[in-house]
Length: 268
Image 1 (cartoon, rainbow, N blue to C red):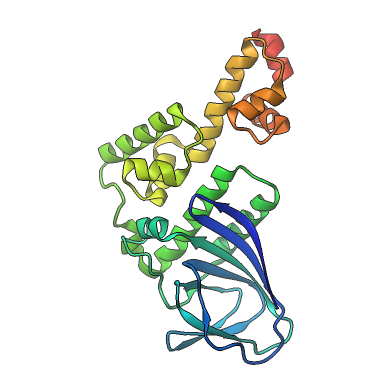
Image 2 (cartoon, one colour; image 1 turned 135 degrees about the vertical axis):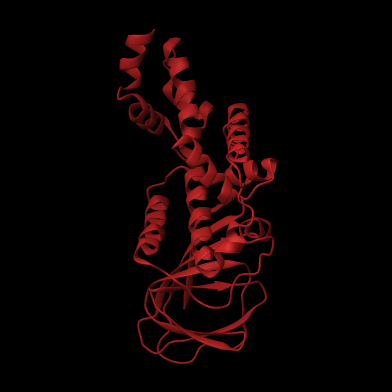
């Protein structure tokens, strides 16, 4: 009756497609949540009972789960439902949510803009987008959803001064220059800041995301090697952390407007 298909699992973030084919009627008693998650309803309608409350859920609302929470799902109609589960581990979630990983009980309103962002995240997983970009996007979506419940808690760890924001941005750039494979959660832990705040501050200070900066560093390394006459693009892509040769070529063209072969002719 329930099918769960993982879409992303990395650095404390798990994104999954959840399809329920339950017919009309009462659900099973005593189901227990296994992790912290924000769940978006993409299709269908059901009633969730948890912690003594009953909530009617449809695609205009999301709900939260906490480990060990007993819940029951009743379906007023046939046809089942389709949801997206966005789970974060306790440490990562606490860093976004004022130090406490326990998520709010009341449903969260999903605006049209947030619904589109959630669906764009799903589309990016299907397009096999860069893992780091997916993680950054998933963490950002979670933080924005939680802001609708308690903006003060989400904002509690934000660096207050321009000097502090510049220091965090410079620290992230230094760490990425030493090893571009560091993920957003790893960078945030090293800098003792929330991943969400790091992502926001970095974009504010540089004009682009951390995942875009990481890709630009890789592109600059590729250009240096291409200028030196490198012809094994497949090997270069693997060495620099690109998904494959075509990924390297797409990024280089996006950054320069020219293919690696044309650049080699101009620069070598």
